[in-house]
Image (cartoon, rainbow, N blue to C red; front, side, top):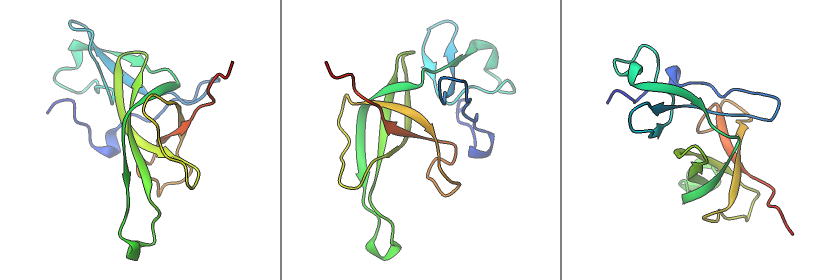
Length: 132
């Protein structure tokens, strides 16, 4: 598939003043967004234009992974996040112990804290909800 990019070639998140943002692409004809960004070296690159995703998204779907107890790893959540630019992104959701993801919850993109993280470059964190 042309839009699949090896992890080493994946676009790195940008860090503007308003927080971490991910690069994606939009099909010029259909308007459909894809993540990660289509590389300029791709044979289909001329069909796409680069776009920057907003720093916040909402949880579309999630799963909680429970590693084998022998691994010593704690359970962690993986989510599909919907961005305002009509792009869906898969990634790890950092949660406090005992917290569970909630479909429709606001989340934001953050830099992964260390190189041992599942996604290496970015993860999602729960965003502050506007309480009125």
